[in-house]
Length: 301
Ligand SMILES: Nc1ncnc2c1ncn2[C@@H]1O[C@H](COP(=O)(O)OP(=O)(O)OP(=O)(O)O)[C@@H](O)[C@H]1O
Ligand SMILES: [Mg+2]
Image 1 (cartoon, helix red, strand yellow):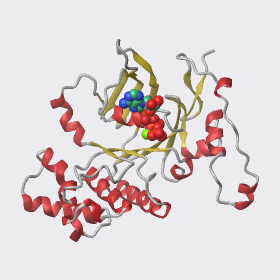
Image 2: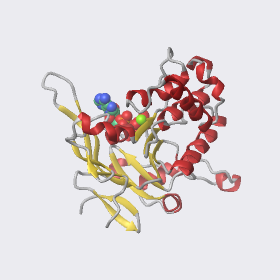
Image 3: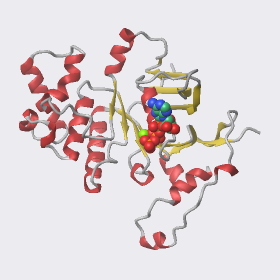
């Protein structure tokens, strides 16, 4: 028996309507994206603004419909599933967003917010049990359970992101898309939230797609890293290989922009520019395996 990956995407593509009278499809926001996520692992998705990272995240969770390709979850293709058939799968995939402020309903007590998914999915409806569960979820994300009766405005950004994470883990998902979950937070808080996500993974075996444009931050957090540019994955590799032997010129340019902790190396760090005109990507370009598990986008011959 071959084990299916937890998540698989094959040749995923998305075109948004360009607008206008004929609703013509616009340029591809995402094209030819393929990768797997194994149970319990973290795959980081990095790349500049507009490269298509969030779109991939939304396609994975079926918050948007792909215009090409397929998403597989636990070995099942998701396209064509009815809402009803999707419902139990949705419980097992969740999302944490970048902005901890807008993600919470300001009029809902935070204890109710974190257990709302349990009510929506009919897992638990008894008020006392929900309150117990809220307290338990608060403990799991390092918040005092006494605070479950407060409202979102009474919390700091870091605390609100903990509440969002509590809400995301309420249904014990197997997969979480974390879309820039620390970008909006103070630098001093960022490491705490990353540690919390890692603790949760150690405890529950949840897998993450961790979206970030900060390569430095994903280095110690992810087993593998995928680099996106202009809607395509240009390189995907184990984290150590990607950081030590980046192969695509775009990855090299991205890495050259990351400050290094060692001042001797930092002093001589040189930024490399990436010139897209020198590395044209065509619809026929494909990922080629350069080393075990290390794939690089090559122009078609
Ligand atoms: N709802 C939409 N309608 C039309 N175009 C969209 C929509 N959402 C995204 N796009 C376009 O798709 C492309 C990819 O956007 P996406 O938000 O996925 O990038 P991103 O890598 O997440 O960027 P950022 O780092 O800024 O969050 C962009 O060109 C964007 O303008
Ligand atoms: Mg985004």
